[in-house]
Length: 123
Image 1 (tube, rainbow, N blue to C red):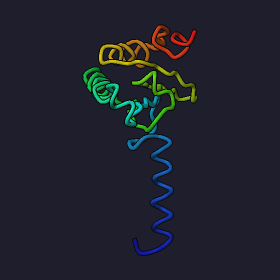
Image 2 (cartoon, rainbow, N blue to C red; image 1 turned 30 degrees about the vertical axis):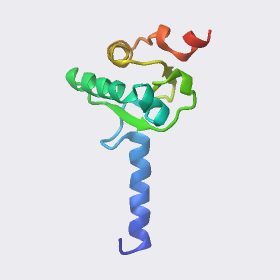
Image 3 (cartoon, rainbow, N blue to C red; image 1 turned 135 degrees about the vertical axis):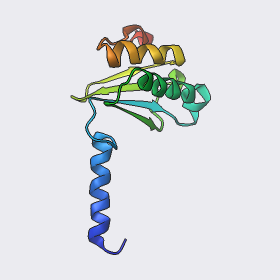
Image 4 (cartoon, rainbow, N blue to C red; image 1 turned 60 degrees about the vertical axis):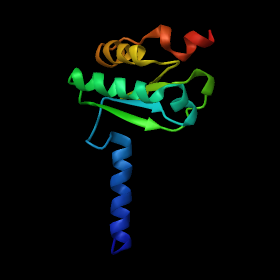
């Protein structure tokens, strides 16, 4: 970096990427809680299952993001699906099979897996 202007350009580009994903606008964002509690509960295989299923199904308009603590450690691994309007669905106690199901039914098929959401566990 040679100037403040260059630094500001980097900042502005980073903000745009954070809002839309590194490759442009996406119709959905999928966040996987990858803090210590999530990793200990199995978040890494869940993240990999989502990534691999999206790839196998040819889904390129979904951004997969590793994030920190989502805040409910006892329900880890947690996956949040955020649609283009900002509507968030929080899936809990995920495993690789549930992750594949969320990709196929919710992300591709448009149907929320109601039995896997936080409200189903808390209700």
